[in-house]
Length: 251
Image (cartoon, rainbow, N blue to C red):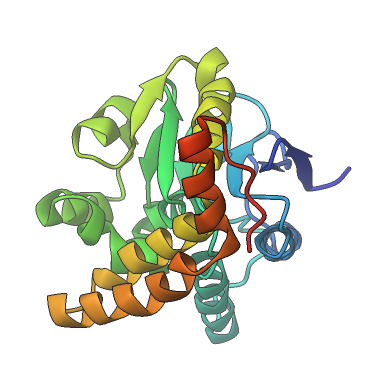
C-alpha cells in the first residue's frame, strides 16, 4: 500500500496522506510528501495543490513515534523537512479531516489556506513528550493572536475546528462530506487566475512578514516586473477585452 496518493485533475494536484487509521508521519511518508510537492511545483500543468488525509478520523495525528527517533539528527531532519515544505511556490490548500496534531499541524500551517471539517481538531502535543514543534513554535504567533498561540503551545491541548476558525487559524469549517468538494471548488477558483501572479503573490506575502515596507516594495517591483512583460499578462488582458476565460501557459 502506498503511503501517499497523488492525483492530477484540472490543473490541481491532490495529495492524500495514506497511513490509516491516523495517517501518522513516518520518514517514508515525509519523503514521499516532499518528493511529490517538488514534482508538483515543477509541473507546468498544476497551478494549485490540495492536501488531505485518508478517512474522516485524521488528517495527520503527528509523527510516528515508532519510526522517528528524537535525536540531534532527527532535529536536523525536521528543520530540513520544514524548510522544504515552506519552499513550495504554488498555492497549497489543507483540507483538514479529524486530528491535525504535531507533524500534521506543521503541515497544515505550511499550507496557504486551511479548510476544516466539523470534526477536526488542532494542536501540538510535543511538549508533553518534552520535545518542541519546530514550525508551530516559529510561526503560530504570526498567524493568530500571540497569547492564543502561546496557550496552544504551552498546554499541548487541542482546539476544535470552531475555535480554530474563531481565532483565524482556518478559513472555514464545513461538514465532513463537503470538505474535499469545498477544497476542489476553491482550488478551481484560484486556478482561474494567472499562475505567475499567484506564485509571486505567495512569495511576497510570505517574505513580507519579516520585511520593512521599503524592502517589501523593492521585492514587489522585482517580482512583478517580469510578470508584466509575460505572455500570460498579455493573454489576461486580451481575454478580458474579448470577454472569454484566459488560457494560461505559465509563460
